Image 1 (cartoon, rainbow, N blue to C red):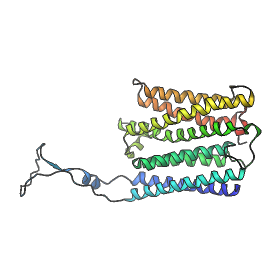
Image 2: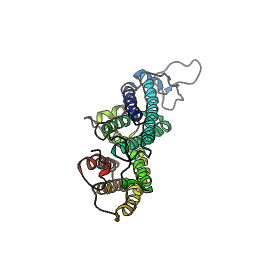
Image 3: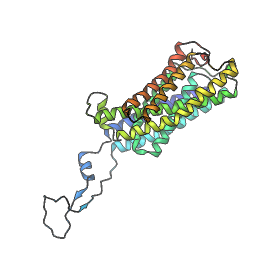
Image 4: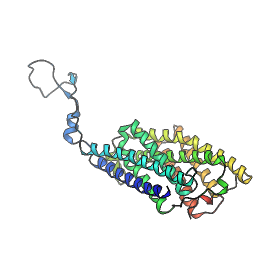
Amino acid sequence: MAELSNQLMALTVLAYLAAMICYAGEYAFGRRSVIGKAAARPARQLVGAGAPVDTDVPDDAPVTPVAPVTRIGRGEWSGRIAAGLNILALLLHLGTLVTRGVAADRMPWGNMYEYILSATFVGSAVWVGVLLRRPALRHLGLFSSLALVVLLGAAALVAYTPVGPLVPALHSYWFIVHVSTVIISSGIFLIGAVPALMFLIKNGYDEGKRSFPYTLGKRVPTPAVVLERLTFRLHAFAFPLFTFGALIAGPLWAEASWGRYWGWDPKEVWAFISWVVYAAYLHARATPSVKRTVATWIALLGFVTMLMNLFGVNLFFEGLHSYANAR
């Protein structure tokens, strides 16, 4: 089962990579041509049989909309294939986790490698949910699949740990309560960072910025306000879960295991830093005097602190959470 899990992991990364390439195809070729856009515009027509053609149409002339030409182009097909590959990758991802758990005879959350597998699975599932509910946001799949490929690649190359039993400190019912909520919230924060970044790019392009990466906003059909609203909704949903998992269940488990609620362990400190930054984002988002761009930058800073807690703390610091270290 452990070897099967590793093989499924490789197939999962390849499926996400293929989806990313197809999303890139839609991103590059998915825009309608000039003729197609002109055909989709409403055309003014004079009412009256046999009326002479007059190019000077008055403003109050009746308007008869012309139905747009519906033709599936290369970009549309590429996007549909990407969505299918994304769902296939999610199923392979699930198989990787299930076989890993069966091989270890426990929940697959016992080390850094398994944590990344689980958090990225949640992120992928959330993205597929967004994709099914809002197909118009499909172009964001290029960036969500890119993030998944990078994180899973890092898990395989840097954090891989052979299947083994849990360390004694993890033998507690708090293991499922604490770790599961943190994993779910981390996965949602991961996907929430994608529309946040694209909002800043799109908004900058709309404001006239033409340097990289704002030029990427030229091919983003979704209005900036929609991207910002999606960013807020994802973060508002994830924050209470993260609060419970990191600042309530975590300290309660620490008290049960080590006899104290707080010990300034590096992972505890960085989890608190992440919580403060995300709380600052939600506060800024709810404050009318704070620009949405400023609030969104705070949300991205929160994701950076999450990455620091995941990679930096585990790889470069020693503490009571060192069982999560891949070394």
